[in-house]
Length: 421
Image (cartoon, rainbow, N blue to C red):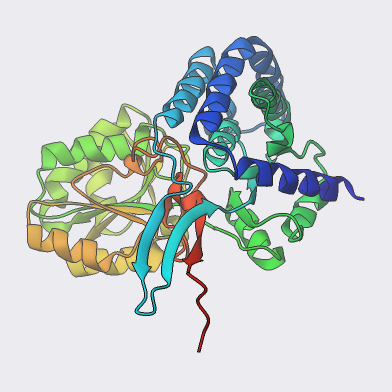
C-alpha cells in the first residue's frame, strides 16, 4: 500500500471514531492540544527559526516571512484560540429540521461530520492548528499538506497536536501531515477519493487551478482576494481614511487586505491627498490610473506614486501596494468590481443608504461590507473560533468556513412498520 493510501486508510478509521465522540470528549482533546502547544512552544519556535532562516536564504519577501513567523505571543494566541473552540456550540448531532409526513413517517435532518478533509496550504503555520482543531470539534479527520517553506514548523505543531490527541486517548491519525516535500504527492492526494471526502486548497491561483483540474474529490476553492473599497460621494471622509488605512496596512499579507481603492470623482480631489498622506506613514506604494494619477502626483503626502499597469487591478498584492482609480458614479464602481473582483470581500463607504442597499444587492462577493474594513473577513472576527478557509465559491459554503461549514447532514426516517404503497 502506498504512503498516502496508508494515511488515507488511517484517517478514515480515525474519522469513524471521531464521529461517535461526545462533545465533552472532543473538548477534552482540544484542551489537551492547547496545553501541548504551550508545553512544546520552545521546540516549535526552534523549528520555526530554521524555517525563517531558510526563507531569508531563498530571498522570500518580508510580507511572506511575516506569514511564516511564529513567536511566543502567536503560539499563545493559537492555544487561546484552541480553548475558545471549546466554548463554541458543537454542531454535530443537531437536528436542522424535523417533520412528520401525512402517512406518519417522521423525517429528521441531522448534522454529521463530512469525514476526512484534505487541506493543502502555503506559508502560514497557524493554518495547521486552525484546521486540526476545527476538524476535531466537528468529528472530521484531517490530512494536511503545507508548503516546503514551513515544513519544520508544521511538523512541530502536528507533534504537539498529536500529543494532545494521545493524552485524550484519541487516535493520532485524526490529524496527519504529509512530511514528504515531493510535489507529486499533492496530485496523489487530490485523487485519494477512496478515503478523502473534501479538499480545501489555501494558496495562490496556481494551486487552486491545479486542484480544480486534477481532483477526483469535491474541492472548496477560495482565499484569493482582490478586495475593493469604494468611497462614495456621501462618505464621511475622515472616517474613510481610517478604514482604508486599516484595510490596507493592518496586515497587508493576508487575503482580506485591500487591493483596490475606488473614489467618487466629486470627493477625489479632497480625499486622495488625505489618504495618500496617511498611507505614506506605512510606505504604501500607490498604483494610480488616469485622473487619480494626476491628483496624486502633486499631492502624494510623501507616498510613492506610480502609473497603474494593465494588470494592476487584477492583482492580489499581499504587500504594501494599492491600486487607485477615480469613478464617476456608483454604477461605474459596481461595474469595476464586478469586472475585477474575485468575490472575496468588498466594501462601500457611504452615508447614502440607497447606495448601500444597491451595493449590497449587486456585489455578489462572499462578504460585502458597508462602512467597514475588509479585514473583518476572518473566522475569529466572525465569532467562528477560526476558519479552515475563506470560500469564494457558491456551493456548500461561502465566506469564512467555521464549524457548521465542516458538516454535512443525513436524513433519518423513523416509522412504525411503514411500507411504500
